[in-house]
Length: 312
Image (cartoon, rainbow, N blue to C red; front, side, top):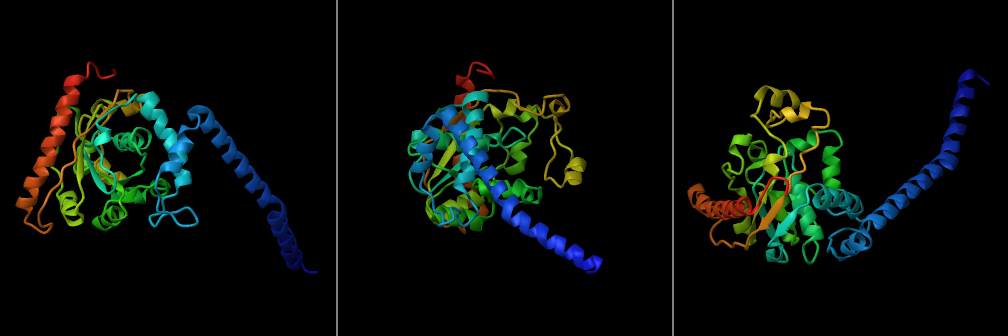
């Protein structure tokens, strides 16, 4: 037999060995890892995490995936990580969450902190503190889908690219959709502008009018101090393909990549409902958006007045 024929034969044998021996071993290993992770979660949370998972209403197919790629099994482990930061690291205090209505709802919040920790903690509050527990669906920036692994991870834990079509479909499924109308401008504001809202986009209001969805304003206090930004760099933003690149000296300090353990305070306001034509002129829509902005500013003022320190 030729050398080429011998090589092909050995390749075939190796392939059969992998299929017969190696793959089952890998599968068994993955099952063991999953079981170990489940045991660890059970030991840390007791039955709470599993019981809350069972109570969440999900629109998934037989494979356990929804039309947007959301996988509750993946969200369970993400939820455990959220709980660590929510309850342990940031020690979040939650106010007024009982005002969030059942069914479709738009959660509209101020954005801050250089990284979307605020979105994670709002999601944790809606799962661990709301009754009944809910998974929220956050609208994320399109550019996040260009980052290796990040886009897939966000999709699997229920986050969706922030385009009107996606938000509309989610609301039609009676989901709770989280939107930060300030976008990247809000999350990357410099420290001198902390707790000052940047101009809101109008899209969320047009969506609320079109789908007859109530809006719950949320004031987030605590995120502005976790990273101290001195400004932004357009050159670095272009280099990394980001809409904005904040200048945060803290990131250059060993261990400074973790946010400071500021205490977060989440204030959920009373639901707001609006009537009108979603295709009205911008000036008409902007008046309605102004009502939401004022509601959030009032919640922020309350939170800043009530807290006695950044870390407590």
